[in-house]
Amino acid sequence: QKEVEQDPGPLSVPEGAIVSLNCTYSNSAFQYFMWYRQYSRKGPELLMYTYSSGNKEDGRFTAQVDKSSKYISLFIRDSQPSDSATYLCAIQDGGFKTIFGAGTRLFVKA
Amino acid sequence: DVKVTQSSRYLVKRTGEKVFLECVQDMDHENMFWYRQDPGLGLRLIYFSYDVKMKEKGDIPEGYSVSREKKERFSLILESASTNQTSMYLCASSFPSGTETYNQPQHFGDGTRLSIL
Image (cartoon, rainbow over all chains, first blue to last red; front, side):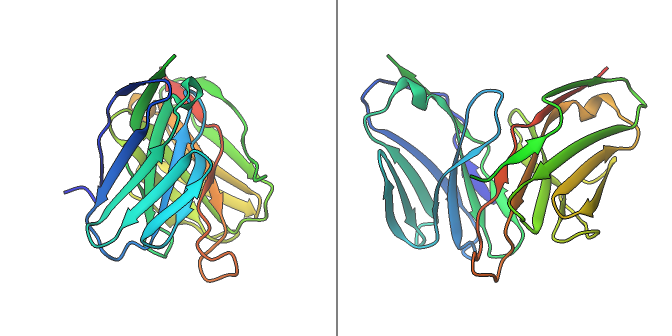
């Protein structure tokens, strides 16, 4: 079993839709949770970073962590064509190691 | 803003060549990392460094080495390039654990797309 599982998609939605992206993880020692956005031919860009269960909001983006279920989500409200990218979840155990999901490709159609 | 700069965006080399990929960060980060990214496999850690002249193997170090002579610079070396090393290479940096900026996440460069012919 992979330590972090993420559906690769692709996920295609119309402009204005609410997008839900998800990852599950297997190790309860993981403490820190991140979401990165990666445009084509660019490096991953940090979107959200959290270390506790619950929700964290930043503009149109909400990161949600459920440690009891080992489940993290990223919600995008009022999605825009410019949100079309690959979204990577990433999880840290408090040390050097960061484990990345394989990424979900998102397409937002105008 | 954190700036991680990789020296080349695209690189084409031949089998057996020694290849150097350079990375520089401007945020005084102690930690630096090299990953490769392949479709369906995600990001895989090759090597990382938590201080000048220090290095640790990641998950796939075979065929690679690294050099960190200065804090801001981390180099990845392909000793004898092979076709299975064709990939996107990403450099990242971060603050270390246990500091005031405890567990700050990694910041990435834009990658070097390396083709070995």
